[in-house]
Each structure stands twice: as structure tokens, then as C-alpha cells.
Image (cartoon, rainbow over all chains, first blue to last red; front, side, top):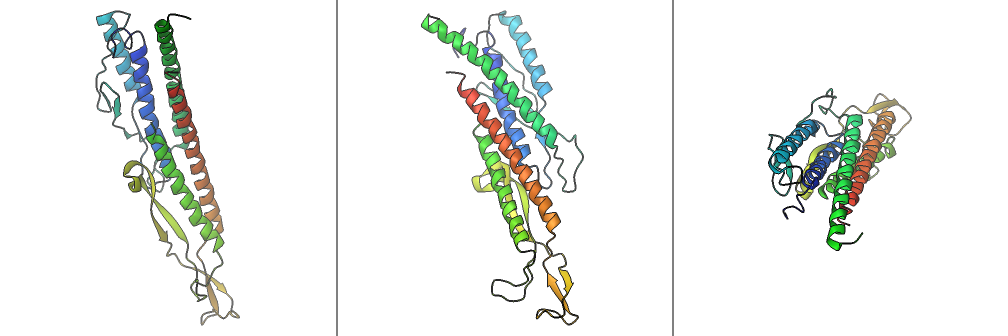
Length: 144
Length: 134
């Protein structure tokens, strides 16, 4: 981490978003893989909890470092753990749908919606991150 | 994130095995002789899925835990002229119901498609991620 460069402006926030969406993608893909496994319960983490932790961390960062940048420190929760290189998710069964005869609570439509939404979140964060990187690149090369 | 490919691929493999078993059931829905041409009506097979992928040592994914033989009663048909008829003139035919097999085949095909969609999403995410630096 280069202070003032790789932790400037929105870069750490976007990094966390990309990490979270990438990890959550694995959960959703696993839910899709187990659509017809007897006894399987769909697992997920709370996106709202992540958003709340992120906004809290952004507020704290702004208070300590001003608007220009600085380290982003996220508070762990039982489902989402943060370290310097990534995010570890500890998912729980969602349990919002009825149980079918094979004791699986699959929900095709919601799962595919989650997949699409999570993909778009990832895409937005990655695209914004790319524009920040392009900006850094321009600054390093000193030409437009 | 490459692990997401393994999860989806393990499910594709498992669903294809399920389709193979269904195909064998449909192919043998009138088979009453075994491979040595002896009288032994075919019994329906079905797969049992389990979570995870033990062959690759992963807890996420899907695998076929076993392929079971359906012990439900065979279909009895009254064919007194058949050389395989029992004392009452009935011949046993496989306990395969083509309607159930077709329905299961559709379910397996839909599940396969859902996993293909997931793989496409993973591919797009990876290509977007690779563009961050470029």
C-alpha cells in the first residue's frame, strides 16, 4: 500500500466492493450448483450489513483523514471478516422460501436475480476502479 | 474467483451424469432381458446428489453420491403367449415411467442451463477484473 496513491480517494472502498462481490459470487454459484441436491439450504451473507459497515468505515475515514484518502478500516461482523488482503465470508442459510419434498429450499428466480445484481455491482466497482487506475497511469506518465 | 468455475463445472458434470442415467432408463423402458439374454426385467436407476466435490477435495460444488436401483414394483402385463409369462400369464416389464423420466430430463437440462449462466457470469466478472489494470 503506497500512502496517498493506492489508498487515495475512492480506491480502497472500490477494492472492498470488488472483493465482496467476488466472494459472494462463489456463494451464489454454489447455490445454483445445488439446485437439486436433497437437503441443501441456500446460503448467503447480508449485503445490507456489508453496505452498513462500508458506509460506517467511509464516515470514520473522512473524520480522521479528511476527504483526500487514508486507510479504510472495516469492522468485522459474524458473517463478514476483513483482513488486509481480502474478505472472508461465513454464510448462513437464507431460509426465506418453502421447503420442497427433498428438504431443499431452492429459489431459482431470486438466486438468478442475485447473480445478475451481484455481477452488476462487481462490474460497476471494477469499472470505477479501472478509471482510478487509468488516472494514476496518466499522472505517472505525465501526458494525456 | 477461479474456484467459482470449479463449483459450476462440478454441477455440470453431475447433471450430465443424471441425464445419462435418465437416457438409460428411457432406452430400457421395454427391456426384460439382461445382457446374457436371460429373463431379468430392467429396473429404473436414479442418481443421488450430494453437496461438495470430494473428488477434488472441495466443500463447495455438487457430486453424484451414488446411482441407486429403484425397487418399486415392476409393471405387470398380461401376455399369456409370451415364453416369459408366469403361471398366471403375466410378464414383468421395467418400472420406468416415461412421463417421470421426461420431466426429470427437463429438470436436469434446466439445472444445466442455470450453471452455464453462472459460468458466463463468472467469465464476464473475470474479464472485467482483468481490465482494472489495463
